[in-house]
Length: 499
Image (cartoon, rainbow, N blue to C red; front, side, top):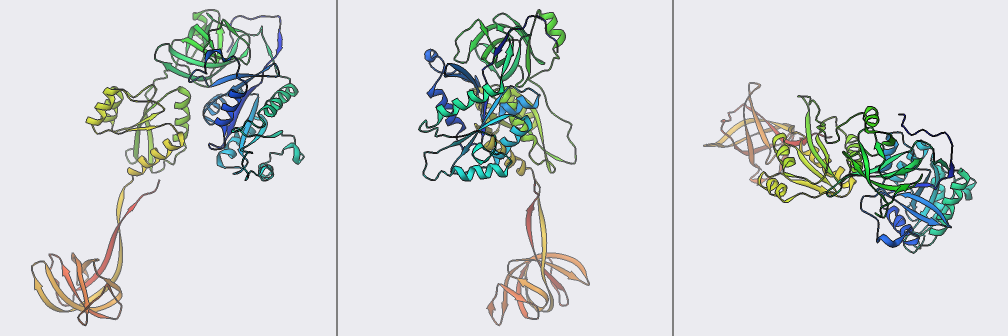
């Protein structure tokens, strides 16, 4: 994509590093991000970071550091999937007590695919059970070799809880950035990456972005692959209005005609006509329903989430659930609270409603209660995955599976009543079990079924009778047993398919 506003004179500057924090869910990513904010947040005048911003900046030793503040790997994965490499440095947070976990390995795979310059942050060093040497050895097994073990990967011991090592970590970030010689041009065609996007109730489509090249200004005409607009309001990560932004600056953009998609690159154009000619229109609020195989079961889903980034993260998780037996059909994927039309669609299509980090309006709740539709609310992507898996399992067929237990030849009829008989004979194979079902065979042909109510031998009741033993049983069933009939004792159990 070629944008307008070409300039020939280069104005190269040293660019602040853009850092992404990765790691296992419970190893302290959020605590570290909070600790950094508390330690050195740029400009405390605004009274806190705007919700959904997804990035912020700190200043350390008179130099800026931009940090992508995303839940887990969600936005980072979406950005990476579109080929955008917005992050310069990755901080891999590992609990020094627990060591490497599954999600740590996932983060390592992200790092290797991106060839991302990495710093290891061993967290929770305030705890007596912390074992940094164990973690360093585990990292070696993952082919991540820290400096103290003869490798090249910097490692710092920290405690997000006490603040220990935070300054050292930021020192390392700046040192790595300096060695990487991060540069950007102020005169190059302005571009950047969308790292978060959502529908603001008051301001309309809103996006958080990081500038990569050039200078972004209020009033610029901007476009991604799915959305265009004119910047009505340009804000910093604290919500303060600014006139322009430089490379690596995290910014909030208001003015898109619709919500752009996380991970898309944005460019500045000279006119709407040029932007529209370049942009490939794609509807964000879309019907994703697929053609269903009539021979397969499906869980239909209406998915609502707080941001485009969340939608994409959830869809990616759902896509990786096993779907050989039960398929997933997302019939609607949209940003915003659950509304009445979502419930109507759920009723009409017999779909489950999944609300990820969003609420439901009162009309929707009333409609859902009336139509007995459950709205599945969750704030954690891992809980959502478990909930959807449980809903899929409900679609599985429960089939009866029969197990034959034993055979008995009838030699005597002791008593016959309506729907009941007491009969006797010899167990010829297996065992006859009290409480089991029986099938009656006459001349090798099945003629009826019933149930063993009681089982006796020598006037004593037994739970079962083995091969070679004679016994009497109380049978209940509509078909009458005769001498010479053969009975097969069997049990039936419901067996559920597996995903």
